[in-house]
Structure formats: structure tokens, C-alpha cells
Image 1 (cartoon, rainbow, N blue to C red):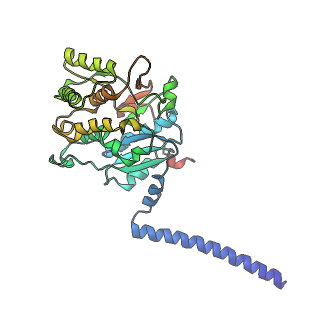
Image 2: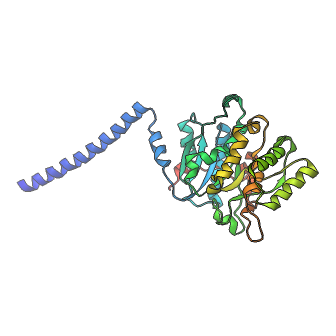
Image 3: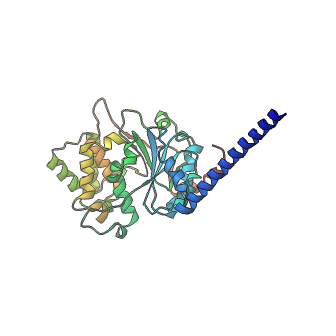
Length: 330
């Protein structure tokens, strides 16, 4: 009996120890919470390390309205199986972005979410970023800043979406099942080229011609170059891609010659992206014109829309009943 009694006491002591250890662990976390002010930052930090695939969705947020729009965007990605459930979603934001908002965003989807700070810096000599409207800073980021961001460099492709966009149906062909990637031959995908707004291009065509002459560049996508020239001569405007939905092959955009071109646009005189509203939609066409490929065998620019893609909060809101995934199992 003494042996049995000792055994029982030992088991009770072990159970007490396990429970005590669990309580102490919880108390330790509470202490961290009180000291640090927000334990959820630790959880979010761990999520930033997730890289399930080599292809991601990228979304830039600037304000609360963007976050409100985002719920339709993220809901649609999985409802219509635009991307797989393992696909990373990268949210780019300013360093003042509230932790509470990150938590709200993580409840919008079951896909892995990562959060990455963007420093909206402007070239030396210009006014500060606070004095430039948000749309200009977004343009600046997606023209040149994104390709220098370390979070982008870890992927092979990234599908850029605006916060106020969504998909309302599945794709229809083989090109749509690869999202957020593309087949290996392609370096870029977007809808277009279409006719752009002549109010956003003052000096851009001449800047491009001068840059080609100064750097000995011959457009490597002659079909697009013909489109650019004829639209400029005949209509006084330039073609555009729909940059609210586009897919980029990162190694192409990180090529030295491509990055030098983008840097010359955003970081040198006349600073027209920030000052004169040069638009990324026209610049993307010019980039593909100068550095894309089109010959009798190969065309590495996929000029194709997605049949289910829509842009605009009001349009997207009509299609979705918002579901909070915090109440759903993974």
C-alpha cells in the first residue's frame, strides 16, 4: 500500500507541476503584454517569415479606406480560387500602420499574410512625402521602389492588386490557373494596351526618346513601339496597361538596365511622377517596349485581362457577403 500511495502522490505532484508550468507560461505572456503593450506584434512578426510559395500577391495600403476595400479583394481570391490557399499575401504599408489594423486584415483571409514597411521617401531637393498626394506616392512605389524592397526580392513573381479591386468569377483558360504566377516565357502580364489620358504624360514621350538615344537603346518589342509611336503621332497620347491588376517577374524588373530606367524616371529631373503626375500605366507600356521581347518566335509580354477582374469598391461590394474568418477553422 505504501508503494501505491507513493505512486499516486507522485502522479499528483507531476500533474500539479504541469498545471503550474502552464499557468506560469500564461503569466509570462501577460507580463510581456503589459511591458510591451502589444503581444500581437510577436505573432505578426512570425507570420512575416512565411514563404510557402515563390509567388505572391502584393497590395499597397495607404489609409483606412484602403483597408475597408481590402475585405472584398481578399474574400474574392479564395472564393473563386484565383490563388491557392498557400499563396502568400504581402501587405505593404507605412511604419505608422496600426497593429490593430493588421489583426483586422488577418481575419479577412486564411492565406498567409505578411506585413512590410514602405518608406515613402522622395528625391532630395523635393518637398517631403507628407506634401505629396497619396496616389503619387503609390505610383512612385510601383514604378521603382517595389523592385528594391527586400520582401519583393524573395519571390519569383508577384501579382499586384489595388485594394479596391476584386475577382467576381473564375478564369477561363490556362493563363488564369497560374496566378499569381505566369508561364515561364512571360515577364509581365496586364490588360492592354489601351488608349491613355493625354493629361498625364506631358514630356514623357520625349523623355523616353532622349533616354533611348543617350543609352543606346533600341526598343526590343517593336510591336509595342509601333503602337506607342502611332498613338503619340495620331492622337497625342500614349497607350496604357491596366496596372490595378498586373503580374511581374521579379528578376526581370530587378535587371540593371530596367532598374536604371525606372530610377531615371522617379529619382532624377524632372521628377515628373511626383510633380507632373506621370502615370505608371503609360510607363509600364514604355518599359515593356524598351526591354520586353517580341520576335518571330517569342513574345514575353502577356497582354491579357482576367475575365472575372473588376476594379472599384462599389462594384466589388455587390458580389460579396463579408465573412470574418476568425470564426472559421483553418
